[in-house]
Image (cartoon, rainbow, N blue to C red; front, side):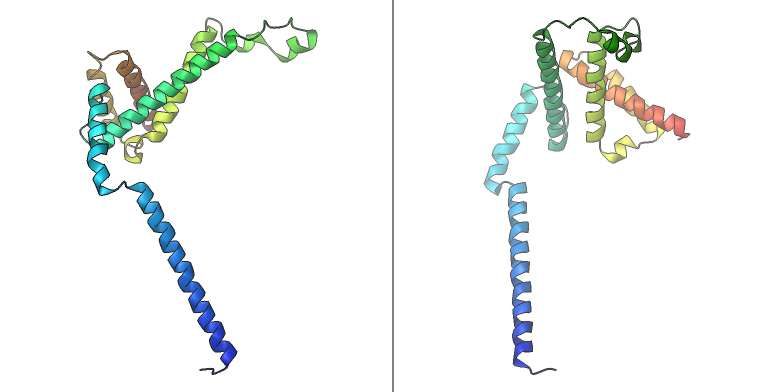
Length: 192
């Protein structure tokens, strides 16, 4: 073992820097953990607020995780409706389209839009597909990759629950069913 004074100082400094780095990493991990979980005295109030929201918004779900997923779905739906309303409002304030010039006619073709579909329907379809994408991305992986029988059972259960739903619940259920149908289509094509 070397007895060189500089070597010993270097080793001590390196050890001390390692200890300091570990302490700062530990402190950062503790801060992250503290941000994830409210203090114990905050849990009852948080859970009570979730129960109140469940009753106010007629959310389904037996666990708090399901209630939170329902709230997230509601917020996503409300957000997409708000964006739709904002886009509609913005379009209503746009100036009239200028007359098409020869160059713009050849670049922009109205034949690209399928006949019979109004712009309102196309906008609605885009928002529906966006809602489907958001719901699919929020699905637990095991649900998104379920087998044919499980997908059929989930879809049948969702269809059976349609009666008696209000408009908001029907909208959410339609997105759920569409996502399940798309997963079912994927599994059927894959031969699953």
